[in-house]
Image (cartoon, rainbow, N blue to C red; front, side, top):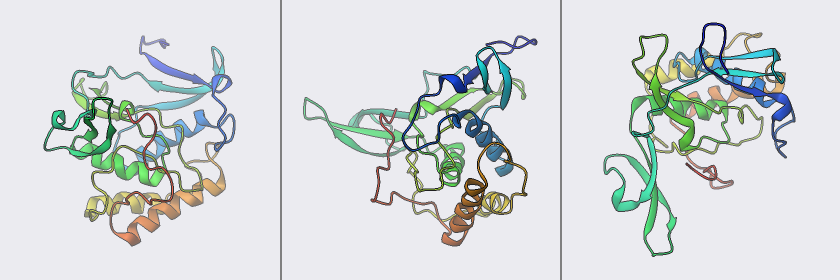
Length: 232
């Protein structure tokens, strides 16, 4: 939809949210807004401006600035393994009907490293490749920028991290990343009020504190699926 200034927005009404077995009904729109605020708290500006509206065309919901994605140059790709960029982070997905190895790879772009940390803190349960876009930043003259969209499946109190961005698993945190985590671990009361529950806010702070204590990016636990499906 478009606003009075002819800007395009993605509108997600609560009334159209798909019911899920592991996330409370009617909460995804507010989680989208909380994800935008978390990106702001961490100082990484990866989530497009996202706001909550009470009076949308189909009722209350979230609105996120539309991003014109550069689909010709994706940052996450799935292909036969010999067709994947050799300098990217990759891993095997499986074997196709012609007995060829199929793999998934993502760019080593530093913005994706920041996004991987963001997802670990947010406990993102659905970071697919298609949720990582490259498009113009409308507030900086349209220069190319990495964006993270579809952030509603996040902030659960139970471990849920499912992502395609595992390329930095086990790597030590850099000082700037420790500063990001400290910002989350000490986030003031009130920042996420009305968007996620008190328990979810405390779990968010605790995940940031735990990552600081661990000193490195997390890796797949082996106790639950580590990839969303489909991954792209």
